Amino acid sequence: MAIGEALIELEAVVRDRLAAGDGATSYVASLAAKGRGKIAQKLGEEATETIIAALTEDDAALTGEAADLVFHLTVLLAERGLGWDAVAAELARRHGTSGHAEKASRTQ
Picture 1 (tube, rainbow, N blue to C red):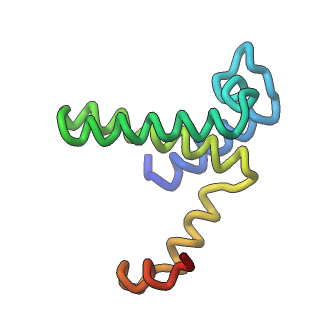
Picture 2 (tube, rainbow, N blue to C red):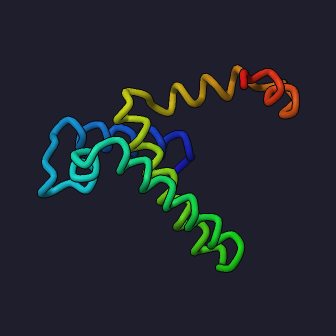
């Protein structure tokens, strides 16, 4: 499966589970019920675990942690009413711009 297809499918499942709101059967719904701060905290934990895997573990562990990171980012985006299409649009906007130039253009 291509990454775009996987992200579209994941986003659809996350949105469905957020809409259903059944925390008893859905991890997504139970996480969302705890609020945006908890979702963001989980995203941070997964980012840390991804870094650790990158530095100390094998490729399978890194891939697994990266998947967890993308999953939790998808939940956070969906909870905010955003999706991967918004991320893709921002990447397209930045395409062809030097990373240094893009960073310098951000307001402090």
